[in-house]
Length: 253
Image (tube, rainbow, N blue to C red; front, top):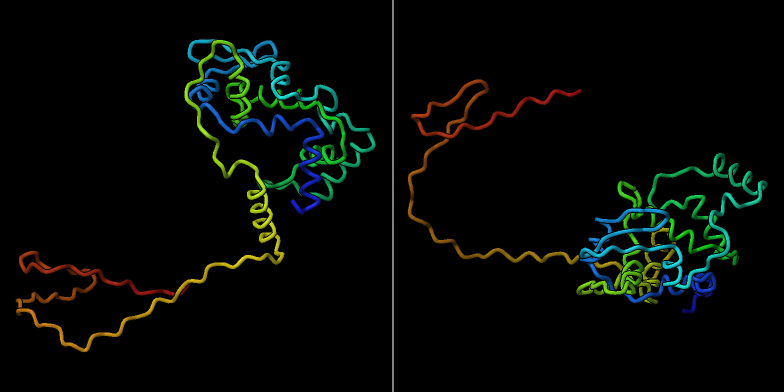
């Protein structure tokens, strides 16, 4: 890519040790994955589940080894920060920044994590990501079920476990240069900046000229005249007439 800022972000992700976690094969086993979450739980610090009658146990070491994740560094950027920076962060969060309920809002924890990645701070990705996985596997947890591809990579290494047929991950969700550039265009449009984008122009429909020919006159049929009704009155069913609704008088507020 020609954008130096975007290149720096990807290079920072590679240097933090997330290359294998974010760049694993884009296939998943839907049936096995569904069964994994339906039967999952956390026992003795491990994620345990049953797939096709076979018990599967995933420890932090197994999870970290599958993606070569770093096991040293920070696990909670806020709690492990020096007290003066924690105080400054708290002041900014409570007095300057408003906690928005938007899905796109950048939380304080997420901002600190982004800062740590760009600044080259060592992060214990093994502990951080495995804790998220444990929340996913805990019954009744509000944590969304994610890590679909990554879980399938771990399950594929379980001896004797048959995962069945696999499916390709939707291409729009795979990060390529094309999807990144599309993301940039959409966000720049939303920020009010000028973007080389031409919206489609609706074509004005052309009205056809009315034909000058006289339409053929159909055979005359007897027409039953509809009697207009007044408010509060109805028409006898013997007359076979339709009752028309009466418009109420509009009273200004």
